[in-house]
Length: 396
Image 1: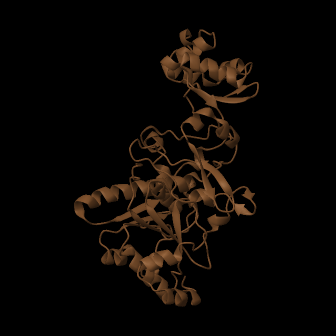
Image 2: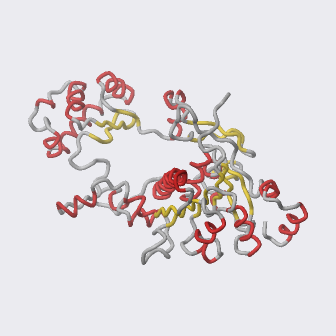
Image 3: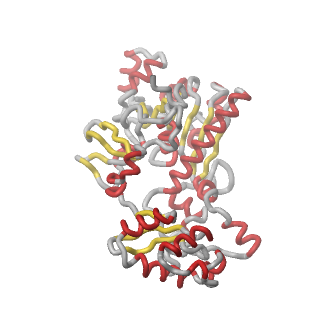
């Protein structure tokens, strides 16, 4: 018998749209939560059409971000829709939202109102700047949060404007922290019996990844700058050319560098210019050029094979095609295939992390708009004639 997922039985209401809030919902659904995705009947989530490419006119972002969820259409701008959400909140464990701060309060659906109905409810609030402070009411997207939190300043070449990653890091970072906050709030609720508010700001989630950036400036006057493909004074650790592509090598620790030196048939480990971490940092460009000259005469496969034999961390710079053909990724089942209506089998990343006893999984494909509205509302006690009346008035 397959074990139940760890969050089986957890009832989650997901409000909002696009990435940050829904990514939190995706993580919860991946591990068994019953996540009800709420969308306005006349204003569905734009993520339904997102993606750099489409298949048969369908966006390919939606099958990932909405997997495992159920879909309910509900107009929260109208009193009848708000009342239905209050009834849902009375039975829910978690509500996730990423509206601009104050929106739920404007509708009479703020945490104070909903927790008066259900004191055990956990409300995870995702926003650009957080729920308090002088900038809390500002519109906030991941791009702006990444800049405010210090990430954008560090990405790119030093002689060019700040660059960005090819995915929405600020959103997924914040969705992950929101999910982590929900887990901690659930643990706390086991002892207190009460829910609480999880306040996840994009810029703060980004700041959490900034390592020692702030104390380096505050205590040593050092301002990190864009450094392209390297980490300043950390060498060797970067991308190196081969005859047929690029590999990443990370061998900045003394013992690893000695193995790399042996792998390359060089005496770098015994050279005072490279023998220590600080020395390698001082002579980083020169050392990287020597390694690049060595890798540039060999294929990626040869370099990776030699690195494996010498215990040196090294790997390819993968594209999606490479990942779909990667034997290790296949053996780990890190890519799964989900049957999506209208698209067939859709390959996508598997739930992470892997749990040995109660692993995650995708219980159902991403839903069509309103696909589960009737089942959800009948479960709340509404009669079929009530549903017809709500639909005729644009409530659902």
